Image (cartoon, rainbow, N blue to C red; front, side, top):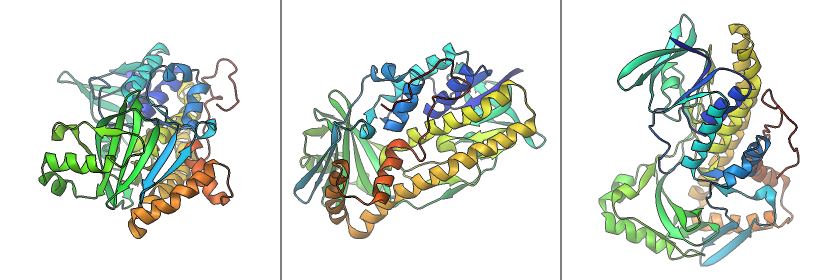
Length: 412
């Protein structure tokens, strides 16, 4: 039986960052991913300034920039025949970056391998290994052959439908979200994130490559079947009619229903993030709404805190009791931040549902513009923006057992 200090389930952004940092800290680490490759559509691509700083701390920012992607220069809110432009170019503290996630994951996987980790693709995790009252590893299947992998610690980063969470019998505590999101790809030459209100419905478009875009349509929860029943031509025409109002030209490229991807939006948090020998991070611990592009960024922050807290203990062979104390410490540090961000994510859709998208965005557009330009904005609103952009509190990777040389501490 193979045995590791740490086994990470899931090679998403959170799982790979955890594997990379633990390996750089000289722990013996394996990361197992069910997918045969990283080529999957409609995954989070938004890197906030806080996450960009983490990658700068690790010496990876310039290489991630070189992967390409979109670099939005601002936001345009189109509502009621008016456009509210919010320019972010001059303020690096408020600049976001769209990075193609398959390329990002490939880079992180190679960095983890270079640091000594095993990153194994195409390996489905069937469940956890239970040894009395403790998790002692995982069972996997590769090529039809089952295998037991032993570990002192299992980190579950396997997403909203986490096999590890289910096997540990950890429940999710939901908060109702009134909408789902219908995604598709498109073409456009713009540089702004666009929020368009058309006929009482909200559409979002943002650049992902030099001439590409992703387009989202916020639909009433559970309504996709009825939308699909109208037929493909009706769906194409509905999206095109909304995009005709865009501030910068953009069009959807929909040839068949397979070009559409439904994201059932949830906002949940696990009743607990840990049992002896197991830690949940990212969407395994807290499936998040897409509002504010927080999922990938919060998962990476979870991974940094987990690696910093746990690396030395697993590397030095501290007792199971001590490791379990540290698992609970990770949850105590990260769970309050996730709850605050989740609450903030749910304010906007609930507000728009209550007073209507037109009235809500007509109010928020000018307010956001004043905020970026340094206008007289209440401190709670500034704090809310910082929470999305920088983290709550900000997480840095410029200190930890993986640091081998001084790194710059100045923000981007």
